[in-house]
Length: 186
Image (cartoon, rainbow, N blue to C red; front, side, top):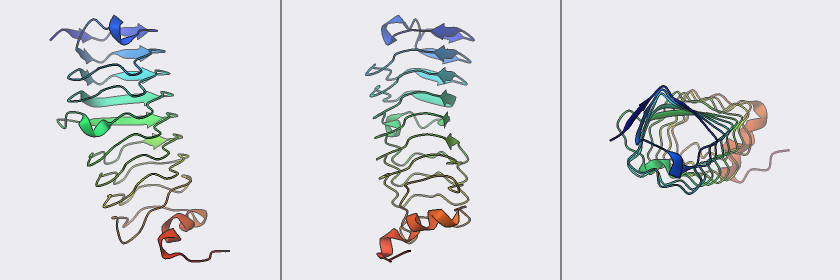
């Protein structure tokens, strides 16, 4: 496997990648939409303003990777390699993504659009969801203990079907916790 260390890439397409293992690299304004990045390794990398929508990440190593202002629509993170899987998101579009059974405790998903995503059986304990739109995202048997939802919007989390102990909510966000009970809140 070709290894690339501490390189900065700008404006690349997937076909321009000259390696399968990237360590401490920065990617800016790259278009990897619908790219086959299966079995690639990204360790301590940064992605800024990149498009990875519908990218294939099967068995891809995502280890301590930060995504900033990226478009990741439809990415299936549940297919990534489990070993040291860790990433964070700021200002990203994560609509229709799957995090099924992913373990991402204490991550950041700040100011993101996370609409209609799959969080089923995932571990987002201690995660910061500040400013994120979680409309129609599926929470089922999800661990969000000690997560911060105070400025998140659109979420609907059934308290009996998820682990929520110690999670932080604003009084405006209580509607998203009570929706399952068909209560009239005025």
